[in-house]
Amino acid sequence: MVVDLLVGLIEWLQMGRWKSVSVLQAGYDANLIRARWFMTSDWGWRVHDALDAIPLLLVGVIMAPLCWRVGQLFVRR
Image (cartoon, rainbow, N blue to C red):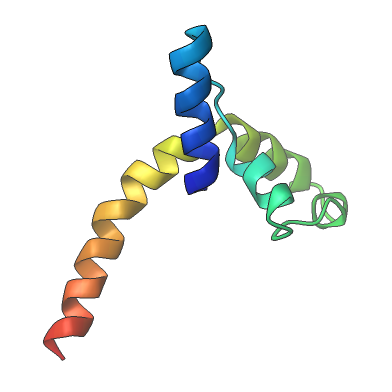
C-alpha cells in the first residue's frame, strides 16, 4: 500500500494526475482476495463492485487513526 501511494505521488508530480487504486485491486495484488469468492453467491458481485468503488487511500486515511488508537491501548497494558 505504501509503495502504491509513493508511485501515485511520483506519477502525480510528473504528469499531474493521481492514479486511484481501489480496495479490490489492492486485494487482488496482495493475493488477499480470490475472484471465485464473488461467484459463489448472489450478492458477491455487489460486494465486488462496492470494493472496486472504494479508493485505497480513503481506507488508509480512515484506518490510520484507528490503528494508532489500538496501538496506544496495547502500549498501556
